[in-house]
Amino acid sequence: MKNATTKKQSGKGQSGKPPKPYSDFPLSPHNSGAWQKKIRGKIHYFGRWGKTVKGKLTRIPGDGWKEALELYKAQADALHSGKTPRESTDGLVLKDVCNGFLTSKTRIVASGELSQRTFQEYRKTCDRLIAKFGSNRLVADLASDDFEQLRADVALTWGPYRLGDEVQRTRTIFKWAYESGLVDRPVRFGPNFKKPSQSVIRKHRANSELRLFSAEEIRTLLAAASPALKAMILLGINCGFGNSDCSSLPQKALDLDSGWVRFDRPKTGIARRSPLWPETIVAIREALHLRPYPDEKKYTGHVFLTRFGKPWVRVRVDGKNAPINSITLEFGKLLKNCGIQKTGVAFYSLRHTFRTIADGVRDETAIRLIMGHADSSIDARYVERIDDGRLLMISNHVRSWLNIPAHGGEKMTKKVTKKGGAE
Image (tube, rainbow, N blue to C red; front, side):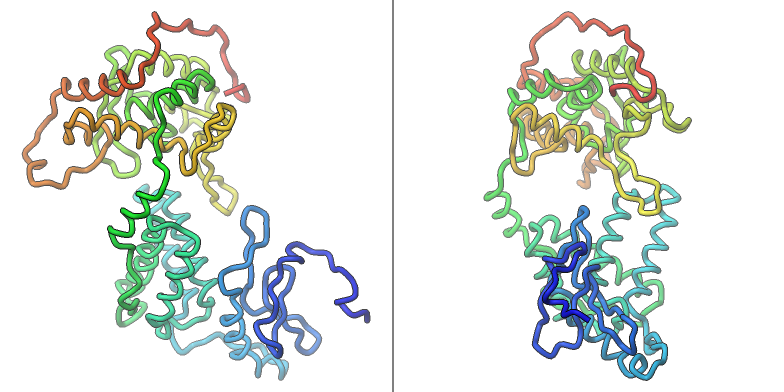
């Protein structure tokens, strides 16, 4: 048999395999991203050193060798004697917590109380916990130093906002295990496993680029956008709509004759109401006129559909439930074509821009109604309605800032787009 070091092997991720952590480490890295060892003529795998990200095998933090070694030691005696190793029965293991948690959340997704996007974030957190600690790690053995190292690893990759979200999701998973009776006491995370402080967040924001568009940039985007994307851009800067807002906007929420949209936020269910600019109304009518036929009956009421007749933001139904955000993709192409390249700026930055410019009116309560933000103040309990004039003042202020060239209305195209058309 030829020495493997004398011949270049083929295989995904070959050049990115990690070295052994020390010379007599009993395992070796496999091209699939797992740690391996040949025992009694058969290859066995113990944990992973890498995972596939966007089609590329990438090493995980720490290469997972400690967890792999722990699993190997637990199974070595049985494997070397030709027996099938038994799973740990001394207590609850991490994979059981993650599987139970995700199963529970799947039911909530089915009832419409949890979005697929949030579910996917929970799934990624579970994957990260298992990659870090090992699927068979006893929950009772997890200690504060484990979570402190986990937080440090995440902080190397993500900023304070995403770090805070990851900390909260991790706490939620183990809180679920305790409240479900799977463990008899809460997990001890230690004093340092917490969200970044407000001072850290403020410093991060001070050193980051503003997630804002200038009025000139928005006008440039509007001039180059397709009819559907143009209408969504206008909803973003006119009403503070985000990606999911535009994708799930129903036609019944629009009153184009009087120029208003009343659409509770899909994310929170908070009431939202906003005036529509003349330009926004024209763009929406154009997008509706060109809208492809819906792929399924349940999409009939959507204002915006892709050229395949599906929502612009959805979850791919293929077993993986991967999220698809066509607005992000198409808007990214538009930014590039228009020569607008800013770090951290995307479609959702239109919502940031609206909120920033609207602040010039200094009517926080009315702005919150347009944005769909909750008002947790005591006074909010006594506010029964907000006068339309206040909302119009905010809307007109932002429109004046944008300074869209005046026109007498755009001519409607006669083309009827069928399923599979341009938009």
